[in-house]
Length: 503
Ligand code: AHR
Image (cartoon, rainbow, N blue to C red; front, side, top):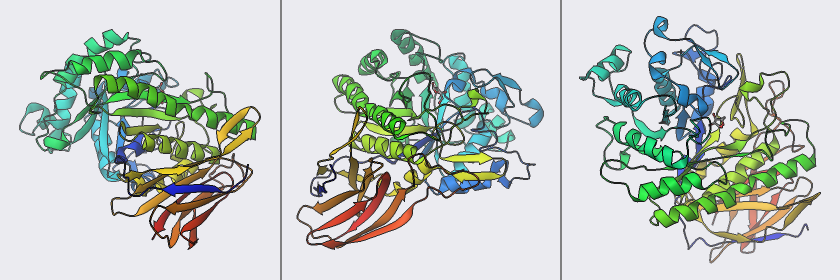
C-alpha cells in the first residue's frame, strides 16, 4: 500500500554507539583495486603523491574512511611482505594466482600502504599470512611495522624511509581459513591461530591502553556456525598468553553462486531478488551474535563483518578474475540497508569492511587511467557521515510492504541517531522503485521545526555513474518544514534520504 508511514523517534532512549568503523573499507591486491586504482607509480602522468593517486585520495578523505583492510582477502594468505619492501630492484614479480594470474609487481607494499592510509587519514587493518606463511614471518612483519628504530627491524624500516613505527590498529589473523585461506577445520584453525595471536607482537609504544591493537580471528562463512562456535569457545578459555579482540564474518549479497546478477541493464525482478537477498545479513548477524553471547555475554569481542557487499556478474569484456562490476542505484539502496542492519546490531557489530574500495565488487570509486568516477555507493557512505560514532536512537514505524513478483520486502527502511555533537539524524530508504513514500516523523515530547540533508535517487534502479556521465546518480539537497508536532518527509521512489532534524 501507499499509505503514509508514521515514524516515532524515542530520543529519550539512546542505544549503543554506532562505531565509525562500520564504514570501513577493504582494498585487496585484486584486479585494478590497488594497481591503477590507488597506485600509479611516481613517474605516472596521473597526478600523484609518491605514486598514490591524488584524485582518489581526495575522494576517500571526503568519506573519512575509518580503516582499510589490506592486502587481502585470499591474496593475504599467499602474501610475503618481504617481496614488497625496499628499492625497486628488490621487489619481486609474483603471480596473483587467486585473481586472474596477473603479475604482482609488489611495487605497492607495506611502506606504500601506510603512506596511503596516512594520506587518506585512516587506520590500518593488516591481514597476516596464516595460510601459507609462518608465525615467524608474521612476527617479523609486525616488528618491521612497529618496532623502535633502534632495533634491527626498525632500522630496516628507517632505511626504507620511515624511522617512526607505524600504527597497526587492527590485525587479521588469516582470511577465510575455511576456504581460500587453507580449508582448515574449525579446530585446526583455532590451534593454528593461537601462536599467531601470541607472537604477532605490536611493539609500537604509542599503542597502550585503549589504543591496543585488536586481533581479529577468522569467523563464519555466511550461515555456517562451525567457526563461530570453535573460535568463541576458545576465546572463552583465553589466557595471559593469547586472546582475540574480534571475530570476522564474511557474507556477500549474490542470490546464488556463482554470482550471476548483472550490474547494469537489469529489470525490477532482479532488483527485488537481490535486495531481498541482502536482508539475509540481519538474520545472519542475529544467529552468530547468539552464539557469541553464550561465550562472551559482555560483548567484548566485536563481530567484524570484514567482507560484505553485492557481488555481481563481471562487466563484459573484463578479466573475470578482476571482479569488475558497475554500481547502480540498486547498490546504493543495498549499501543503505546493510548499514542500517549494522547500526541496529551496533552492540555487537562494531566494525565492517565493504568489498571493495576501488574498481572491485561493490566499489566506492571506479577509475580508468586518469579518469575517476564516484559510485552511488560512495554517495551513501558520504551521506551517512553523521552516523559515524553517533548514538543509536530507536525509531518505530510500520514499514509496510513492497511486492514484486514473488518477492516481498519492507517498503521503507530507516534508522535514527544522535551525532557526536548531539544533533538528531534520520536515514530513510524507500525500496519501492515505483511509488514515493510519505513518512510522518515525530520525536516523542519534542516539537520539530525543520529537517535538512541530502537525497539520493535516480531515474531507474539500474542507473549508474559512468565516465561519460559521472553524476547521473548524485545526492541533492533536501529540506522540509514542520507542520504540527511532526514533519512530513516526501521520500521519492528508489531513494536514500539522510536528514538532520532541527527542534
Ligand atoms: O573480495 C573478494 C574475495 O572474496 C576475497 O579475497 C575473499 O576473502 C572472498 O572470498
